[in-house]
Image (tube, rainbow, N blue to C red):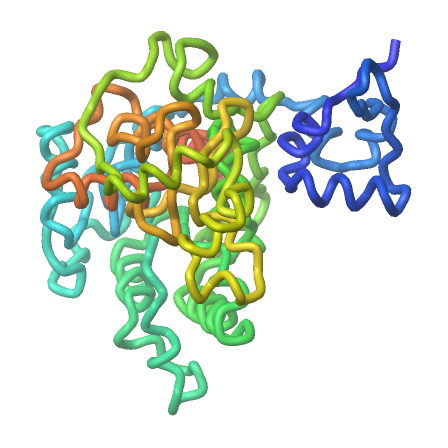
Length: 410
């Protein structure tokens, strides 16, 4: 018997907006069946989409059983509040060193893992040569904002002065078997593609083969959030032959905000209470009029004009403004502040910004992972993190790669 999907389910599964689904309906790409006044889309139509087929035939359960054949030592740079580090710990990596320049994020790492060797300092001041050929894996989410300045006069031939240069210097000094770089998806097109081409050239220069970078959507890896991250996997040239890297399979379904904040598939209890930012009385009065899953365009026109002011007359959807999340959909990408006008992340039924622990749940941090510093610092740490479940998933693929390298080269 053919299975049918609601508009919301199609939107969630394909990772696209409802308006795009409705546009496809108008063009004939999707043809709904009306049942009890509700539009339903058949499984046969869903099979036209690659991601649906990958989820329907996912090898997630098999891949989740991947374990290291031996202890693999790792180093993490630009560690932040530990989202990537925690995910890598989940799959068995033994971390030898973590580096983070932000004092509050560094304090978070030390608070949660007193046994970790956390160096809170500028990466440029760290000499990694003592770790040469002692580390299996190096990881880090290097910021890339300096590239536009680095390349203005040198045609992007020199990466000095950028944090990617420090990342590549660490790779040269440590010579890990494999490295993982993580960044925003915008890096692919930054400065008309010259930035990523500079990175590729540098990686080749230092003796590594780069797997073609890929953007992964977190919603497909057991993360209840529409977040996208770019991953770069590099294998040392002397180990590249006869090895292979396999990107992780997607999970069997997309998690929603309800999965994040309520007892169920992701957590064994409802989200604990915690501190959080508050709206001003005027902003709360406006947000009270936004329905679940809605945003500023769902306000009465008078309130739209009052809230948006000059922006009301500008183009673009600005779908993050006055945004109330929905229980039945993944969260929008978390930002560094849930109450700012451009990036509201309002609770689905309570008229308030998401709290610290709600933020952490959406990033799939466990409830016993605590954050230090002011409330604004904690939001920033969480908002900048790699979702733990996404890190865990990528970590398993790296473990499988290292297992294969050991098998083929020993």
